[in-house]
Amino acid sequence: MADHQPTSHRSVGLRALAIGLLSIALLSTSSLAAHADDLGAQETAKKDQIAENAVTIKKNQDALNRAAEALKASQNALASARTDLANKQKAAQDAQAEDTRMAANLAVAEQALTDRKSDLAVAQEAVTKGLANIAAQRDQIGAVAQTAAQQNTSLLALAMLLNGGFDTASLNNQAQWTSLVFAANEDAMQKLQAAQVQLDTAQAAAQKAKDAADAAEAEVATQKAATAQQLETSQQAQATADAAAKTVAAKVSANQQAEADAQAALKKSQDEQAQYEADLAKIQKAIQDEIDKDKGGGGGDDKPAPTTGTFFQRPVPGPVTATFGWRKPPIAGASSYHQGVDFASPCGTPILASAAGKVTYAGWNGSLGNYVVINHGIIAGNYYSTGYGHQQRVAVGVGQTVSRGQVIGYEGTTGVSTGCHVHYNVFKNGTLINGLPLVS
Image (cartoon, rainbow, N blue to C red; front, side, top):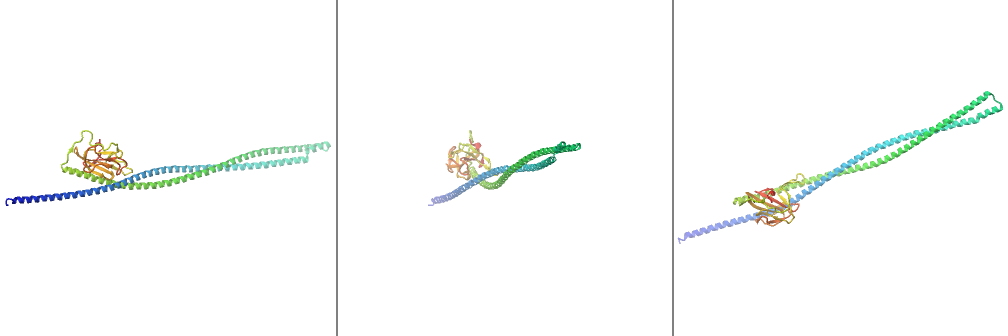
């Protein structure tokens, strides 16, 4: 019995040790399971947050694009309205200048009419005087004729000769009187003829003056009508210019509102960009954690760089539509840094793994939509991972090992996207780089 005691003690001790080890293992397994559950819950929460952020980002991007379009349209409308206003103001100024010119022409025409009326009055006065002069000359001739008829000096002289009742002196006196009578009558006729000529001249001048006055009056009427029409045109041009000025004022107000909207959208976009960069930093940290973990476990195998071609296979056959780096902003101050390369192909095109590796992420990732990350391990001394965004459908799962050229999903336009393409990321030692030079 005594010989078996040590053996019994050893058995008890071994059983106790086994039980202890089993307890530790069970506790460790329980702890790992709990940790796994916690990680799973965190992963689910993160995916939900990413999905929610994706909706917000899409809204902010859409708002920014709409604001940029509204601002551009408003600026174009304002420029057009200002050009229209300048043209209409010029037309109004030209119309006012024409008003001034035509008013001056009307004043000249009215002065000419006044002058012609004055000339007509003078001419009519000359005609009146001529008529009076003619009447006076006719009266004088009538008086001479009446005197001659009453005295009839020629017949009296003949009678005196026939009757012998005269002497030489009387005859001479009568002859002299007769001569005087005829001379006076001839002078009166000459004056009458001269007065008639003067009257004819005055009447002709009066008619000419009347014609000139009538023409001047017609010109004044024409100028008045043209001036009235021009005034109406000028008033219309000014009213049009005033309306254009109001339009410009409205466009200025609309432009200011569009600028305010664009700035608000820009602020949202900048906030979204900051959030996106924070999320990306978390992704990069997760990759860095894997790098550190691999290094802690021995570092993994260092695969040599390819001797032919390039590091990575092209994910889809389509062309490059956006390069790595700063992108042209839709509005001033809205620049964003494009942290990948976009390859465009039709939606549904199979997306191929750029190199062999292990899937470390497969699911929704905010603005990148359905997203896959493949860890390719160490290549030529550097740790590489690749990411594939905007997928229509993911064809792999986390932890799955894939080979170069294997289908990992299908091209789409999920997340913040303006068309079917693959957003392609390359991480070198956990840092995003321009992967285009590494892609065949």
